[in-house]
Structures are given as structure tokens and as C-alpha cells.
Amino acid sequence: MSVSNTRSGRLAFISAILLTWLATATCTAMIYRPSEGRFKDTFVLWHKGQFYLFSMYTPDTDANFRNVWLATSSDGVHWKHVGPVIKDAPFNIWAMSVHRAGDRFIMNHGSFTDPGVQNVIRFWESTDLVHWTFMGHEADLLPDARWYSPKSRLDCMSVVPVVENGRTKYYGFATGPGGFLESEDGIHWSGMPQPRVEWGSVPRPPTPPDEGGFEVGGCHEIRGKYYLVGGWFNYMGATGYGVYTLIGDTPRGPFRPDAAAYRLCGNSTRWVSLWARFCRTDADLLVNGYMYSGYTYETGETWLPPLKTAVVDSGGHLRLGYWKGNDALKGTPVKFELSACRQVYPNKANRECTCNVVAERLDFQAQPERNSIIRTDVPTTVGVLDTTFDFDRGVVVEGTIQTTCRDRRLVAPSIGFYLQEKADAGTAIMLHSYGRTEIGRMTIGDRVDFLPEDIIGPGCAAPAGILPHANHSFRLLIRKNMFELYLDDMLVQTFNTTHAPGNIGMTPERIGFITQNGQGLFGNLKVWSMNLDEQD
Image (cartoon, helix red, strand yellow):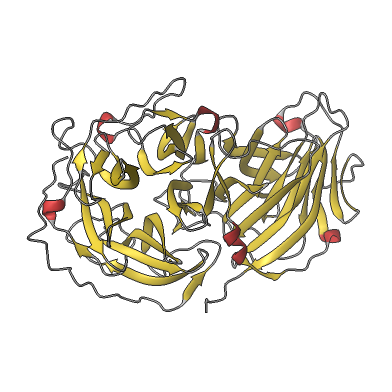
């Protein structure tokens, strides 16, 4: 990459940006968005006991992103609006990242040299993460013409400091074919040939050559390995946006797809949950992304979902776990009666498909069991709690689930959750005991019809189905039309109830439970209203 080593002539028009408070209230919820306008491509940094959330931002609904939004939080859950800390820049500001270099913080972000040509990274500096100074066009980073087309994509760099020979060296991982960089000081960068990727049996992403392999979300060293995560769409059998994991022994590669846990998060028939970016605190390595309440980025609103814990299991696979800091979401316990669980399917008397309360837990029977079934013929029982919860405010539901059957050799039972959106339809989350999780639209009439919109199976980092005959814990977080499910504290999926392009999914009316082809047990059920109180 061609980079000037001088910092003279730095633009002064924005050298002393004043902190603008658009709102003094704390926005506290399961997920966060600005008080007005639109943001996307979030990045969370932790520094001296405080979280800083940066994102590209526009005060309007158009795509003219020329601002940087900031929100802060002392606990990573309750966010306070700060507002735009870079405002009305004379160029587009797209996805960004922030890293420490000496006594300064350096922000880099993607931008354009010509309309539609996203081929430059621009830099800002700050000493307090609030007031930012543009480092001048002499610091602009362009594709290195020795190896790459000048108009090839270069966008947003994740910076990884590495100690080599007693000195800290910085490696940059950016989106684009020329997106591998190095620096001696974290400020001045030079381009490098692409690190080698050994794809093996995993297909390459369907990205155009001038885009590079992935949209890079982040890279981080964990236990001596380098985990590179990136996203793309129309890949691995789904039209939605997914995030995938490659692992290298060194920051220079070679990197290899982690085939056993390749899909880290996201992906479906639509764009719902995007990006994965690392955030190191004193105690945890966290991951943040962003999500949509609609079908794609063109519909609905953009939100920050709860932070996740980066979990590397004994096999070296990166997965996303429940972060205990999110317990701060639990507010007032909500009382309800298990006896208020009303069976909605079958809606006629049926002695083989029943919903009962036994030993302070829900006992669903879906009989007769079958060892060879088709989707429209599987025995199914669905029940909903008639208790009304404030899903607009948000609720946290926890408990245990178990699915079993009488013929344990030949039958595969399933269990799940039902978010009822109207009397005869809603969103179902089905955990199958044959290594598969499905989420989609369920309609209930004379029969149950289920259309999967997301499938989690082999090759996914998320739990693929459920182990039969064993007790599992779950956490279900619901706010408005968005939800997250964790099984045994591992993320299953971040999703919403939008089922068609151009529409925004409905906020659920009630929560329910599902069992197919056997017995389902739901125990230790607890519900909390989400804590929306302001911070001290």
C-alpha cells in the first residue's frame, strides 16, 4: 500500500470536534440503537472500565453516511447516547475499527475515491475516544499498485498487535484483495501480498475478484492461533449474510476454514445478524455484531444485539457463548402460572397429543411416535402461556428442556419454542434430536405447517439440534420482533419474526412451546421483564 510517512498538512477543519449530546437519557434494553437516525457496522472497544460503541451514522434515512456515532456503557448492557463525534465529514465514512497506538487511539474506516469505488482507508486520531482529528489525505491508504488494481476494494482494517523479537508489530486485516497490511507503529502502513488460504474441502466464497474473499470483521490471537472472521452472502447454501471462521498459526497464514464450526453466526434466507468483531476486556474476550429488524439492510431498523463471549472449545473451534454481563438485563420477575398454558394444537380432543402440568413442569406428549416421518405428518403438540408479557419492553425467559421418546433406537423427537404473532401463526424454533435446528414460520389450522427460514446443522458453530433424553438449559431473550436463543449458554441464533421482504415482523403476543414425535419437558421456567432503568 502506498502511504505517506509525513503527517504535515493535516486538515484543521475538524481538529477540535465538540462533543454533541443528542440525548442525556440512557438507552437500556436487550439491544441498542441511536435515539434518531440510522447506524450500522458497529464496533465496540473497552477502555478503563468503559465500553465505547462506534458506528457509521446518518441522521436521515438515506445512505449518506458521513458521521460517526458514539454510545458508552459501564456494563456493556445499558448504553448512553453520546451522539456524533465525527460530524458531516466531506467524504463517506463506512465501517470502522479503533486500536491503541502508543498514547493515541487510531480510527480507520472505509471510504471512496470516486462514486462507487470503495478503495481507500482513512484515519483519525484521538486521546480520549471522544474528540477526533482527521490525519489528512497524506495518510490515506490505497491498494498497493505492485500487486492490486488501484480500484479494487479496500475497506475497514482490523488491527492485531503482535510481539515479535521483543517489539510490538501491527498487522492489519482489511476487506479487499489487498487487505493484508503491516506497520511498525500502528500508524504508518505498508501493503503485503495476500496471506495464503488453504480452502481444502470448503468452497471459496462467491466474491468477485476485486472484492477479496470476505468482508473482514475481525482477527484475534487466542491460545497461539489467529482467528479470522469474515462475512458474505449467497454462500454455503443460504441467501442471507453469514459470518465464517478461518484459523492460522501465524498472522501471515496460511489460514484454513474451520470446517467443523465454519458458520459462526448469521445466515438464513435473509440478512438478519451480521458481522463479528472482537472486544477484549480485562476479564473476557467478547464479540459484537449488529442485526436488522427487517428482511434485509434495506428494511427495518439496525440494532446492537447483546455482546457475546468468544468461546474456544477443546477442539480449537471458535463459538459464541452467553456473556454473564447480560444478566444485567434481568429486571422485575414476572409471575405466571403453568396451568395457564393453553393447548392450541391439536385444537380438538386428542388423547395422544396433550399438554399437562406434572411435577411443576410442562409435560407435552406428541404421539404416536414414528420412525419415518414427513413434515406434514409428524405428531405435534403446541401450547402457549395465556399470561401477557410486555414484549415491546422486552423479556428474558430461562428454564430447562428435555425431549425423549419411548423407542429410543428408531425415533428422533423434537422440542422447541413458539412465538405466537396472531391466533393461527407465529415463529417457531425447532431443536431436533437428529443434529439440526430450524427457525421459521409456523401456521396452525387443521394441521401444523412449518417453513424453515434458517437451518443450523453440521459445520455450524451454533448448537445443531439437541441431545435427546438429556436435560438442557436455555435462555430466550425477546424484545419487539427480535430474539436470541442460547442452549446450555451457547448461542443458537439471533433472529426476528419478519417472514417476507418489505415487511417488518410482528411483536409476539404470547410465548409457547412445541413437542414433536415424543415427549417434551419444560421445567424451572422463569421470566423477567427487561431492566430499562437508567444507569447511576
